[in-house]
Image (cartoon, rainbow, N blue to C red; front, top):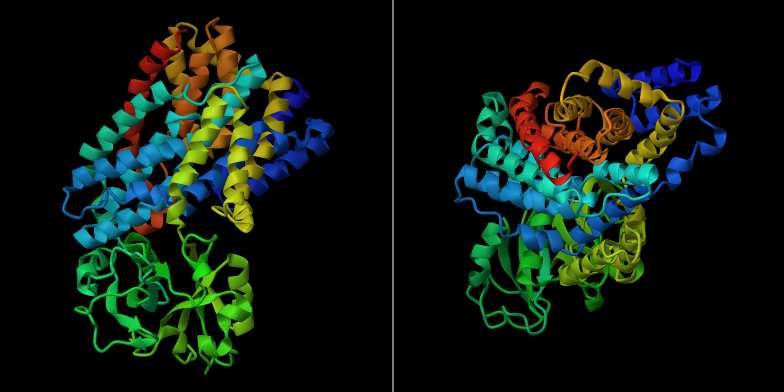
Length: 590
């Protein structure tokens, strides 16, 4: 073993130890290791930053932006709205949510799919008065399984495809992963929906489904647009839909004046405004479901006109806004921002929202382009609440967003353009049509993951060039030489699964891919089934909350402990191994 090999093995061992320890952020660990490798001379200086221009890194960044566009346009919500029914049995609910989660994860990033569906799952659990912990972990696992189905569903597939391109001159295509991935997803979903959820320990079931936000309930207004389906009907006709969205209809505003009482029996007319009470997301969802419009004196500020953001802000004593109204401050004309709602310790107002005199301690719901909301908040002297903002869904652009995505994928599949170029063109069109704003293009990208991947690529290349991966492959072959090829494949997958449960799945795929090819070459079989096995195994991070970001996201809302995951995850990994090995060998013969 050469000095270069020993140094790289030691460096990677230190990286893995630091990642498992988890006290230092993983991107800093990887970048630090890259710098050390260059300083020690084991990584050529000219190759230090090749990872940042690597096609796998570019594709992952573009997929994250496409995922944001799908959420902004309402394409995901359009699909997801049909899965919520508090009257379903728990197994049926888990099964339907799992299927939808897996399907979404196949076409957008699986983290984005979980974030969207998690909110629906939390809401359904609250309405059905059942513990959210029973359904949240199966949903997380389903979105991980769904990512295996396509090239862009999960980063390990992208890494494996690009490694195959570098090693053999041709990458795996968009749907090469589909036969095996689909079989794994079906088997896994069947398990978690029928049996797996029953393994969740009792203590985790005490989790609170929804935590009340700091702003409480807001009083807001919504415009009735021309030719609305609600014209001629009454607010009472909307009460059931409002109840489903957890919104209360407080009254009607006509010609600038609030009608007496709740006005539930009054006929709705064009240009009326409904007065609503609820939390920000519920109000926005109700407005979208009823095809009303965000209340504004400027009709160009509608839901579909541009990329808008809802931000909750708190009013400190001494702020410019104290003692003034939105009309008095001319908030819209001066700052390009509207005051959508006000929360004041549960108090309901008889005045128009824009005519309410603002007091210290009020929580204001501002709407506008993200940059303008930030400027307006600073000008008003109010303080944005951390993690209390979300993008207004542009529901009228759902079909446009889907069409652009389908066209980009189709162009890549038929070989008209590389996948990275197709996705880049899609992102460009999303920006042109304001489905994703300029700031969101950068905010959508998970930069720590990009830095992690870009930093590990040169280290992996150096390990391969030094003969380090060949040493590992030869050691595996030496210990398993008496076994048939399918058994060696299964052992390689078990090792990869174990690493992925404790390390980032991208890092696992980067290290395991060249080892898989080395093993295949040593036993003189096709490397494709071994690469496909690594792709499947690297995504199977079901034993711990740290192996996959989706498992980390649900830990708090579900009330889970570290040791809860393996109870479902261990049999699930065994099932995936049992169905994937024969499937891989059938579709990718040795």
